[in-house]
Image (cartoon, rainbow, N blue to C red; front, side, top):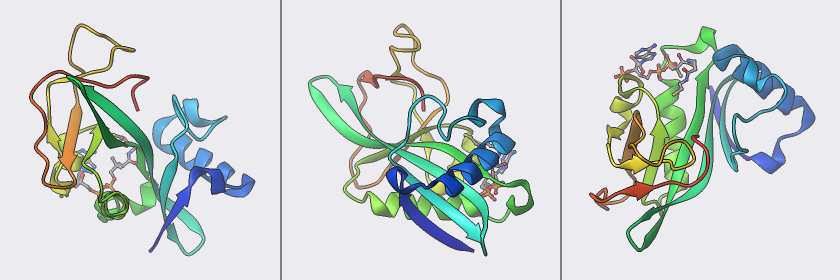
Amino acid sequence: MRITYLPDEAVDEALDAELRTLLTRCFGGAFRSKRYHFEMPQHRWLAFDEDALAAHVAVHDKTFACGERAVPFIGVAEVCVAPPYRGRGLVKALLKEAEAHFRKGPFAILLGDLKVYGSSGYRPVHNVYFPFEDATKPQPGVLVKPLRSEVWPEGRVTIEGPLF
Ligand SMILES: CC(C)(COP(=O)(O)OP(=O)(O)OC[C@H]1O[C@@H](n2cnc3c(N)ncnc32)[C@H](O)[C@@H]1OP(=O)(O)O)[C@@H](O)C(=O)NCCC(=O)NCCS
């Protein structure tokens, strides 16, 4: 299995079609006409079996607000593995590559199932608000991994824009 990094701007027409096929297969119709759900990610990690696209992770460059601080983070999104390649640890392998690329961190954040991401070091947090969705309640299902030694803040964390 070969794992490759690609900035989204380097995605050509052929890969765009492959990505839409994989994303549609894994998530359903929203991806049929585009290779992103709500907004285009800047980075992609792809796992290939020979020439076949086996798995994909997208990464958004983002910033959250906590009090007066603006903290950069990577937003991990659209994690998917083609059915024949599931159960082989590809999620962990792709995340490892993506996280290593962003050592300056300090955090990786995703919305997902702890059972899938717990073994990669992601932990649930309950203080993240997406005002675009609901400014009154913290968003459920938010998982965080510190990429350096920084401790996750305790106050209200606000992420502008849509879910990713
Ligand atoms: C979820 C998905 C990415 C998992 O792919 P995979 O190749 O089976 O994942 P891995 O082999 O790398 O396993 C990673 C961990 O997830 C767990 N896992 C995988 N599928 C799971 C499921 N359906 N329910 C619970 N846990 C699951 C594995 O047991 C493993 O845990 P471990 O490391 O503690 O042993 C894949 O099933 C998929 O593409 N699904 C459709 C798209 C999707 O739901 N993406 C996630 C969006 S948040």
